[in-house]
Image (cartoon, rainbow, N blue to C red):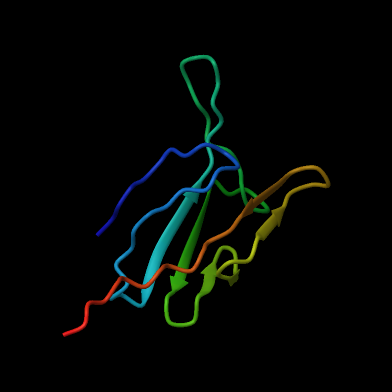
Length: 101
């Protein structure tokens, strides 16, 4: 099942519910500029030509793999040249509440 969410403002956290019964959660991140004109352009966000990050979150280990890698709750930075970078963080999903019985 594919779920498209967004757009989201830059530098602000957002929340997306995931199915915690699954072990692997696919994540695709894209960045678009917000021109005042009628067209917005997709930005390069990974070293070399790359318009999106394709990631997988392993809920059992909280490891992120794919076009970038790291741990949950840790900032991941992809450097372009000395000025350009793309930074993101994936927080560990909260466990659903359980009722006794």
